[in-house]
Amino acid sequence: MHCGYFPWDHLGPDPKQAEQVVLRDDHQTLAAAGFAERVDAFAGQLQEAGVRHGDVVAVMLPNRIELVVALFAAWRLGAAVTPVNPTFTPREADHQINNAGATVVVNLDALAPDAGKPTIHVAQMATRAPEAPGAELPAPVTSMDDLALVAYTTGSFGEPRGVMLSHGNLVAAATQLGERLAISPEDHSLLILPAFHSKSIVVNVLTPMLAGAAVSLSESFDPESFVELVADIRPTYFSAVPTVFSLLASLPAESLPDTSSLRFAIGGSALVSQEVRVRVEERLGLMMVDGYGVTENTCVAACNPADRLRKTGSVGPGLPGQRLRIVDNHGNDLPAGEEGAILMAGPTVMQGYRAMPAETAAAVVDGWLRTGDRGRLDEDGYLILVEPDRESILCSGENLCPTEIEKTLREVHDVFEVAVTGRPDPVHGQVPVAFVALKPTATVTSDSLLAHCRSRLPQVKVPVEITVVEDLPAARSGEDDAKVIGSPKAGAWAT
Image 1: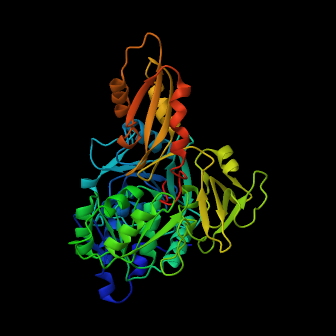
Image 2: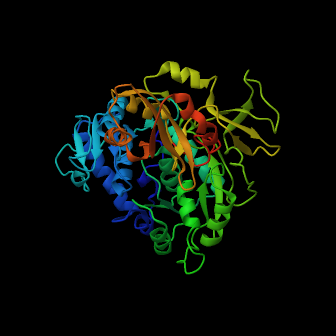
Image 3: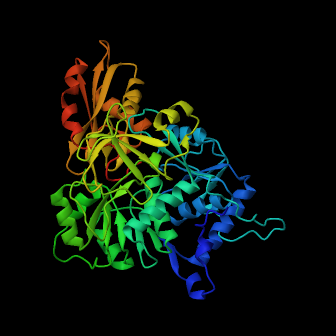
């Protein structure tokens, strides 16, 4: 069964439809027909590189048209995609590429990591179908049950886990969210968050495309250029993390470009203060809606509606087709208003963790996903998030695992023990800080430890401060304060 969201599916007999702009980035614009042609051309190139139905293609690109083309081209062949953070160090990128079983890597250039796999750089990507005999593409045979994404998440797990999402998962999530937010062909999604996140793919690419709406990708963000971009290309919605909303709230109320095209912005109430929320809504003339989900549930579970009752402090009711439960420590359902563990079920629950059957069995029991987050449902079915069960550092929408950073610091011979925690930050939500106990003969310094982290970790995971202490218990004193920031996956739909 055809999975039904390829770019040519929206092309009808009306020639104006084929010429409608559906995708743009900071440098290019594609109409529907041109996008379909690019997808077919690159699918042919992937086929020549040996990609077949059931394979995995690693795509390691920033926010640009080629990332979306690569997604659909792989799916055109029945292959899956593992989106890789383009800021990853070679160690991190190689781990994901190998763990996902990728056969081909699509990246920026020869300097980008590739784990020794066959690689196609952006400048080499085909834009026209090959003319050689025998280069025809097979008919699309991708089904809803086929693997679509292998999205990696860390949280507090330590080693990244590959979350396997099917086309059925993606279609269900995008359809449910599109219904809740009333997305139509007149809408226009602006993506400013990193497009390698599964949340970005679902919320800002697939949801509008399924509705026949346009998608724009921007590779960088600063508040002044953002509002100018909005005035220029006229999007109707965007999603952002608390850092972005804090910066937008700092814009002067007067002399702003015309942002009246915006209907709403998607954020997270657990992390965005009411003061920031009010300022953003007043300055940009839009409504902020809050949502919640985890990667294992295709990033969508609950969302406030854009056209009816919103509840401050809530991430909204479950989406159509979603089932939410709040249970106690014994798995018993709790009444409205009582706090417990959040479970969810429905067509968006993952196929499982890649090559981790025991972890999959522990996470999904009788069809119910154990999120690891805590919350309560009010009398109207709106979900309110509370302090999570597991520790994680949420920095600018990225889930950082303290264990991963601690493991990196322990690689230094002079380190005896280390503890990493999150420190509240008014712009980023939380930032990682490390406390290190050294061996008696140690000669390393905080600066050299930071240099080691920078050589092994992407910038977002590098501690903003490393403090050398005599014993570790004292280093944990700020941990309770850090926990008030909120759920590791709350609101901002972080991966």
